[in-house]
Length: 171
Image (tube, rainbow, N blue to C red; front, top):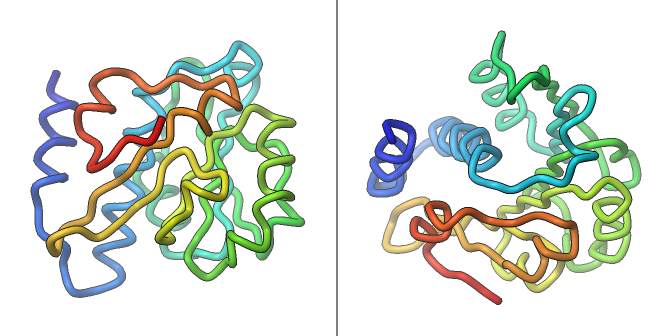
C-alpha cells in the first residue's frame, strides 16, 4: 500500500526543469512498474534484466535505485545498449527518445517477443509502435500511458492498480 501511495504521489508532482530530475523519476517509475505487472514464468528465472537503449542517465538512476535490491528472488541487472540491434535477454527494454522507435519497431517487437519483454518508451506515439508503457508530459507533469494489447502480445498483464494510475490506456 505504501508503494502505491508513493507512486501516486510521484504522479502528482510537476515535472522539474532538469533532465537529471526527469531521468530520476523515470527510473523510479520503471522500477515500480515491474512490481505491478503479471510476468510469464520464463521472466522469473535467472537475473531480472532491465536493458536501457541510449539513455545513460536513466540507466545510472535505475542502477542506483536498485543497488542491492531484488525483484522477488532475482537480482536486478541494468544493461546499456547503443541500439536496438544490441538488445538481448532483457525482461524490460527501455527505449529512449534518442531512438527512432517508428523505424525500429519491427526489430524491437521481435526482440521483445523472444523474451516476453516489457517495452517502455519515452516518445509521443510509442504505443503505436510496440511500447506497452510510454512516458509523456501532460499539464507539465510526467505521466505514463499503457497499451494493454502490446503487453498481452508479450504475455504480460497490468495490475488494476497500475491501470488506475495511467494517464491513458489503449486496449
